[in-house]
Image 1 (cartoon, one colour):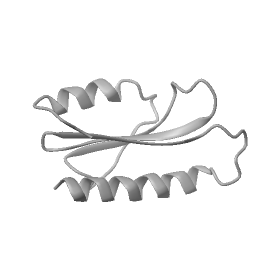
Image 2: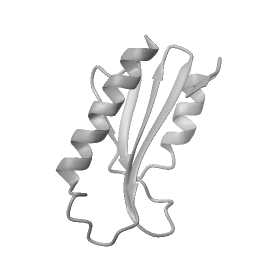
Image 3: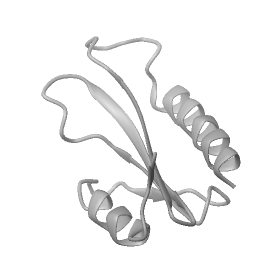
Image 4: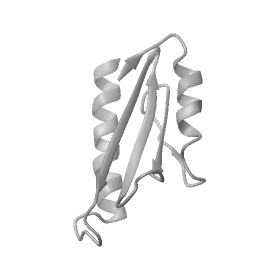
Length: 92
């Protein structure tokens, strides 16, 4: 979490690290999106980048275990969406 007067500009900058699979998250702060992490050396993960007024937040969930059975796309989406709701709610 970071407080900055340039929250929207930083959000746009961070969003540029997402691939084309970035999905906007509705009702999560002022702006939020989820995307696959592409800058991991090994492993897989998801990232949420969001903003509540002048507060920028990032949430990352990842694993380095290859073929992790508990790390399905649906499971990770549920976990990261819940975390984003909680963080954004606390920042309001």
